[in-house]
Length: 418
Image 1 (cartoon, one colour):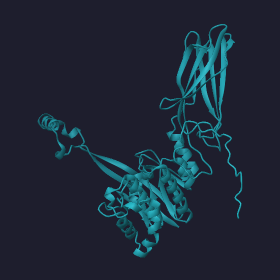
Image 2 (image 1 turned 120 degrees about the vertical axis):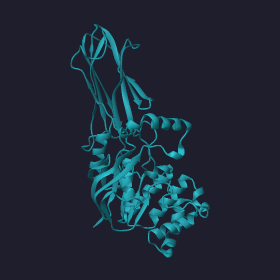
Image 3 (image 1 turned 120 degrees about the horizontal axis):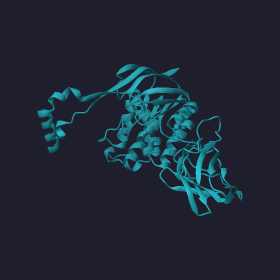
Image 4 (image 1 turned 135 degrees about the vertical axis):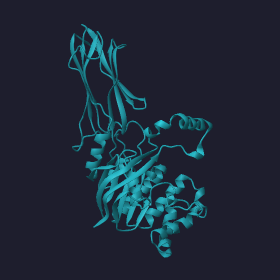
């Protein structure tokens, strides 16, 4: 049974480029005076108001029990969609049909009255969902315990921190048993422990047959929690379907990678009178028929260059950097003598070694172990995506490397019952 049906929904906003009269400064006054006196003829050439379509002709159906992840760049229309589904704003065109009670957590403080206490806001939100006092009381203790705000329960929520707002908002949305639960990226406000609790609770909610819509840039969490996904781009629903397929499609479009550099003509190849670069490429051994690199993916780095001198003692030095400039490691080949001609080198980067993130590789050709003949900076760039199994925590895994080490745990002495 379809619990949400969207038919040709679009949302238009009007962007006003004209300065507000109430916020004018002396400089603005002189600028406006000049415009009024000398620019009147050009007034028709500048648009003070501009139409912006946050969503355009979006169609989909969501079945009962679906767990739908929504991915896309910032500004793709994801949050606008959730506001329409939550009845916070109406679509400009099209219509949405929703069958069931909806609980939303879209922004810090959404649905709270700042002058009311935490206790009063719990009952207010329950009433908005159509629940009576007895139904709310049954879940009250669980909400307070999950949110961890017992000490501040009778304090007006306007004095809450953003973290307390989010904890209480999520606890209310998750425990008052709505048929449809809508969660935006607002979970990123919470700390690591809270995110873990939220993701675990969302898993429990999904297993109870309720419908979840989840917007997040954490693709690992979306893959773990959601059976379907939507990919939005510039207000358009680009693709929808199986989560793995959608995430792979999304990553293939947003990945900033340059895995191959090649020059067939020695004359135009980069280098100097001593060496010239022929090719430099990173060859991933993609896992599970995917087309993106994740933390499991083994890679081979292959490098070719022309040596233009006789009897040169050379070696290669490879530097791997994070996108923020930290050198993760530097490795080099043994140094050996080469005659004129083509020289090749390769390096294996195993899977389960680098953490998810963005990386660049630079390569040096070194003579006599000390003289750099040529430094090819940032020759290769690539992204590594996250992948996890058997783990319920989907926050950022710390560090630049993520090796699989022989790390064990065991029971050394059983408990003896008296």
